[in-house]
Length: 78
Image (cartoon, rainbow, N blue to C red; front, side, top):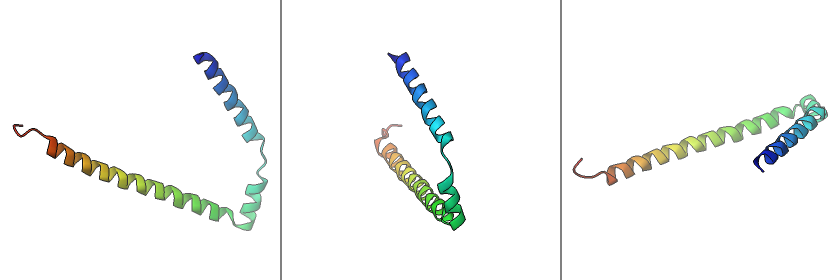
């Protein structure tokens, strides 16, 4: 069963890659010609930067909570 699922995944990957190669870049050319491609790239960058900042803030909060938990749960004899 595991081998069949691997073969199916490989087959689907090959099909998806072929359709991606076969697509024309007409929309990208049109957006580049009208200058809208920079708006799209800018929005993508803003979203990615927002995600990275959110992840760093969450990591910082988690580290602080873990440190607090370690301080309070440490045995008094140690």
